[in-house]
Length: 135
Length: 408
View 1 (cartoon, rainbow over the protein chains, first blue to last red):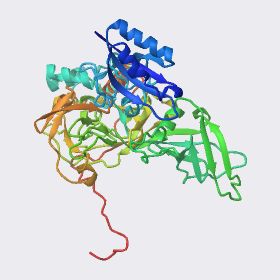
View 2: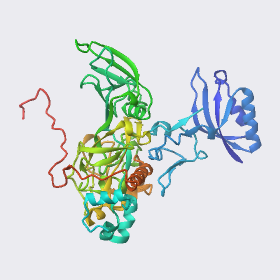
View 3: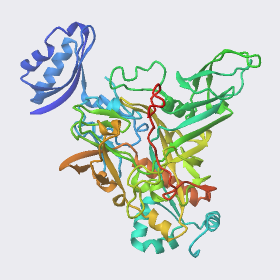
View 4: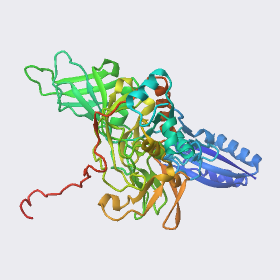
């Protein structure tokens, strides 16, 4: 079993079709919705954790791509502008996964993209606005 | 070795000769612990401090030069942020917390406050072009009524930071006891149900915590301000030196503040950063540092202060702060705050800072290098700031409702 976190972009014409649930059933996967932002008449976006056999996850991603869904691995999504970050620490307490943390000795704020679920809470909280989501 | 007490002149002479011994306030903790105050005073000549955090009472005066035809500006906007123009013809003041016109503010709560005065100041320091729009009613000597132009700092006659209040000696720790949601404050997002404790001080590195009675800092003192050499021009607004102090003399609440001035043209955008506080507004993070002359054993002792010696009051910001009521939930040391979690009413509460210790330390290190290199000489205050014996306090507003005059 493996978990793979992906960002799915649905074009408008796919919004009324059960692409995700079909993929989940077809490839025998578990799933965890980390974020969903789907409004009528616009492109939809979903951050999903897919759980299952690696080959099946690959298959589901490939199948969704064939349906017209744009699939991105999650790590690319939340980025920090290291030049902009002042290491203040305002983000630490709002980060739900501990991806943003302060080193007790150096007082530097670290950002671990592996732990980040792209919830985006840190983006408007960061005072110098060093965090951004690029979907 | 200079016999104690040392004088400013003697220390400056050592700086000029390249013989001065300088440590940061963080390093001084260990020096004093090892040698004692007397030994530390003999060995160390200067202790440098630093702090970097949002300082709302900041701003800048700009003189934009006269246009042709001339104009007496009555209203002005810099990148759509209103600037104060109630001064001579082409003098403006841009305040750090002024929000860009048209910003939705908190209409969709929490507002994002993406751009304001603090950002304008940062953009100017970074050398970026800023759009100036201005209006006037026109006079015989100043006929022009409208102006729309790009300006940049190099073209301005004067551009200087003038901050009515910087460098709060100590500060509150904000918690959220009563709201059923996270609250959005100038102390950041304070999580519901005692979900966070937000603090904002460099603690043992902070300028005024290393000189709690303002013996070496006063009017005219040269400082590090935004990357340039600036000066203290007055006590800051809300200067409150007569509040509670611990047995070392370190204030247990906000206490002293500084009013500071410095040349914006010499500053570095690394230490002048526009910030947006979600649901609150815009501000400016300012880097500030001092070089404290170790004149005697007492100053050595005070600069040896550590995070364990400094406490801050824990204040509820969901109700008590706003309504000026209730009591602090207790006091907590910066050493405890820096562990990442503190205990309040028997519960473990995660802590989150607003002030960058990393950059505070960088400022103290930079100032140390400048003193060692002979680029930063020490100044004896021209006049002292009001201290603990001054009787100066911090008054609330005396509310006198209009229409009820004489109804005591």
